[in-house]
Image (cartoon, rainbow, N blue to C red; front, side, top):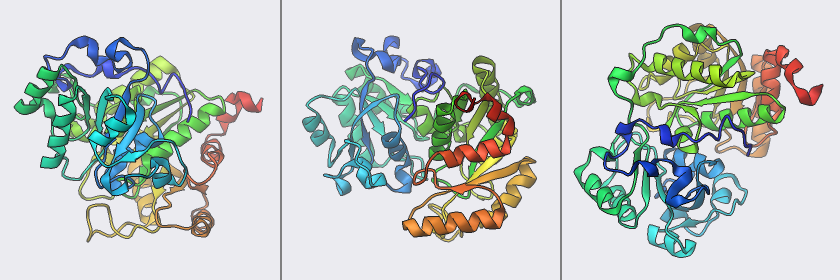
Length: 398
């Protein structure tokens, strides 16, 4: 994976105070300096019965890309004994899967500095089992990273436990105080570089992964790229410009995203900006996509789609939309073109991927690829084809 100052910034130290237990020692907020060390902090990811699945998307994302943490292992008793990279993508990464927290600690021969809750269930809340495992981690002296809508810093039991053990609880999804939230103002229209939003036809379909792969690939070509993360996984991964859109009141969603985008533009002066999408514009249960389009005012969209997914995640009677209908809806709402399609290959053989890439490229007359199974140069091609002026800014082609 790429390493770039625009993506590896130290940002947990700037989390709003209300996301962190008020009795926590402020010096612990900087996760790059835990225990007096400047080394990347160690972590285990809890993803019981969900690793590689859609509800395990936070764990999946961190196993693929985690500049903020040194991931020691994944906890999932159903896949214990496997290499997490092999289980997820068919390529070993050296991060093992263990059956329990105790086994993970025993095999690591150290207590990890952080316990990351790696699941994102549609309910947004913790089970009784989940809570007990987190309390066990706190008692062992581990700091907690929680990306759910259920805030542990509001729970007296977790407050008492964290105070006793002297650990940090990071409620990633907890928004800033309403008095500090911003309304959309149109400031985003001053951003003078291409803004590309990665949209999708469903939740947990690969938008963040494609956004990350695209940003890394463009940087490797020499472009200055800012990736704006809009979900809890991107924040945990360490994106310096980020927010959790579905935790912000709808009235302020576009304005908060606009403010992050404009701040990134002013500081980084990027050649191009990639904005992670959420959900799907056509999804009746979620409105985050609409807020992202309004707040980002994109110049182009790349659409993520899973050809073999028949029903929307967690909605077994809700059929997936067609690519054609989603493109039409997006382009009418965003007043911007879909410039490419990225395939999620779940359930697909290699020949199926090739067939769908060929078929979609012919049907829609735009580039099509698979961000994980094909070279990243095809993602780069989508962007350069849509914004040829960027070619002149590529030092690798000069």
